[in-house]
Image: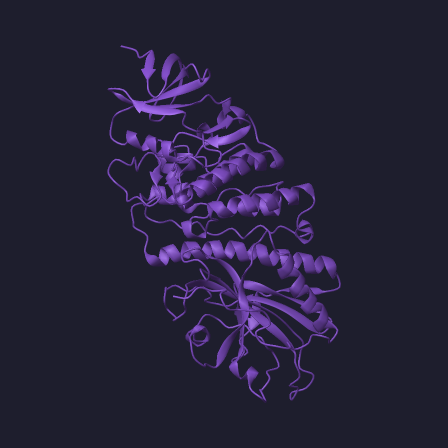
Length: 508
């Protein structure tokens, strides 16, 4: 027998059936106070009560609100305002970057407010509704509390293949990073009109989400490309946090309107070298080494874009400079040539800006060194002039370390810039080095600089995040140091540390 009237906190009259989500049927509904609403009836079966998480989200922006709720003998009932349309109905073709950012900004606000509370787990255009001029998240049928343990009735395997994150395909615990991955798929779809991975079958989607990279985005600003790429990183720990999405979209919108980072407008976007597709057995559990390899891939992508932006900005400002790809170098001991995987040099007059990722820069084992945080990948950057003669001990330059690590928030990896100096720098008659501050690789020796007590080295530069769409300070500092070095005016720091370092990394 069809239900035509519902008595909840208000009396509701049901009209025609207008649709259905994955876990229920939707009917037009009205009451004396609300003439244009919908009623969603969710059959009482295992997992269906998850939809009622929706009721507890008061205060979350851009989430379709619940007007009334209750139950019948056979169903849970949710009453919601009637939306104008879904994002799927609106998505007839690719949107312009400006239009896409407007939609994504609404969704990002919702994900930020839901962070730490609820993981949606099935974000897609069908579940994004236009309500009162805002794009709002709806249909929490497979959602779960963020801190809940996975239970048999959580609909763990209910997902939409084009939008499902790698961890969902591995049947691992979903977190807010899972929703960020789906957000990246949404963003890619809005900008191109198609999914980043196209299946068509479930096994195809699984293999593609786990092992492949999406086709590159064309005709989109570097800031927006970087954000979408980072959302689609395979390792959940390397994706942006939901609370970071809105700020990134804001910066991307400024870039589109012409008021963003001027240096990045002129940077040549370099297509990252095609990485070999690593086939892995579909059913094999990932080892710790495999997990870290995925994080290292994210590091390689990010550092390539960062250093390409620096190189392009410097070469655009100083066309007389000489750019030298650092594919082959001489071993400092044997003087035999060997190949470096990444790196370059820029020569200007007698000065050199040097960027290199050393051989073996990927650190395979966590806690290999006694650092207070985890480092997965590292590189070095520096400016230096040559010695005028063998006994030249005058100040010649400086170098900084670039570490891909979770220095500030456990489990959240990104590139940080830092540097080191000798502890004797503060002595009454310190022995000054000709290159200081200097880069150190993450080793047992550099780890001592983070311990209490007096050691040979100290941290001389705070851990500063290096973010692809916020590079003004990074680019300007290294451009200025190169310029000063090229005319012999690069001066030794007047104090060490040059900037406050306390609190820039986390303690164990």
